[in-house]
Amino acid sequence: MTAHTAPVVSGSLDLQHLMRSQEHGLAADILALQHSTTLLDLPDLPDLPAHIDGPRNWTGPGSDRSIARTLQVDRPEVKAAHGEFSELELDGDQVNRQRFLLPKLQSQLEQCAYDLHYGSGLCIIRGLDIENYTVEDSTIIFLALADYIGDQRGLQNSKGDMLSHVTESKSWTVPKARRHGIHTNDDLPFHNDMGCEILSMQVRDRADKGGHTCVASITTIYNDLMQSSPWALHTLAEPNWPIQTSKRGDKFVRSPLIAFHAGNLLVSMDPARIGPHPLSRDNSIPPLTPKQKEALALLQTAARKHQIRLETQPGDIVFINNLGLLHAREAYSDSATSSRHLVRLWLRNTRLGWPIPSSMKMPWDAAFGKEAEKVINRFYPIVPMPEYMECKYSNGTAAFVADDDSDSSDDNGGEITHQE
Image (cartoon, rainbow, N blue to C red; front, side, top):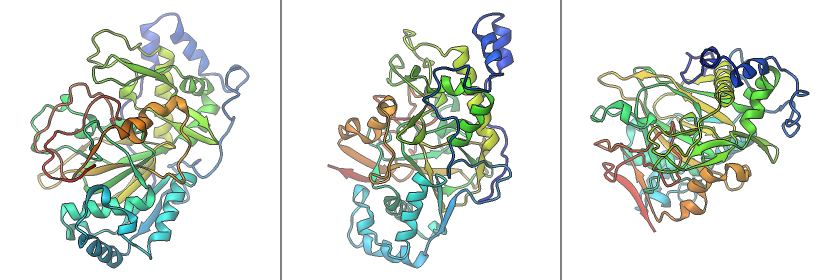
């Protein structure tokens, strides 16, 4: 993996535009706040540390060390474990580390899990020759290796899908503007998958041009903003951000976007989930204030400043600490023979996982908690849906599960199924 500055990803807001749109009031106050670099002007900020150090305090440009732990797999060991698992004729939720023994790799995989929570927050498994396996078999290997990293899988939509396909299928005819962000080739701003603890992605194919995943540490972003714009951190930590929750776009909860809890700095932020939904009919979700908009813009700017670009290849499995790192995507284009395709899995490690503050619990509970337990049937779609089913109320960059949208149709073109 190489670390360097990547092209700018869209999603920032222009302060000067805010100034032009309002001659007086809060926009002018924001400009003054930008010049505040001490905590003395912000009496409500002592709950936030003045500086956070540790292994996640890394930056991309000019980094003199490798950020991600990269693990080269032992192909014969994986092949043998897969052969033994195949004889059991099991699938879906029955794929786990106990049935997929990897004695040589086990300690390294466990170290990856530790690094995700208490190291840099980034790990890549490399060397899987997925071209020698069927799609179903490569999915089973993905699930098995991931079980060494996190022993609990998160629900990704209300229909029970445990896997999502991040791709733009050439067969889809629904206009791009009416698709979920992960099902387009557009760039995506820095965000995280709200509710997820460990974001896991299997790389099936790369784009012809662009499409890199970029990551940035919220710890480094925090330290940067504490020096340049501490008021923005105060704003981001206030528990009054309206987060969309309902399929009808007219329900929301108020939450902070960052929190320092149990010794960890957490972020829970998807720009497209914040504020009114475009299809909201009763305007019950309050709009963001100019101050909030500018705080989001500064967060995006700092993330781009400190980001690294992941140079992945087909067969790679990428694990990201989704509570401690933000990620973004460059716009991309596919050729006639290429089609950027990632398979997404949400994980948590019940032994190493971070405590979740109550203010950020709603999306987590929908993926891993009591709300997720209400969904009985679990499905593992191994390929994207052949015909795109428009998600009427979807507005997220990376959907979380409340009572809202689904990433896929009932017909996923084949699946590994678990029904309790």
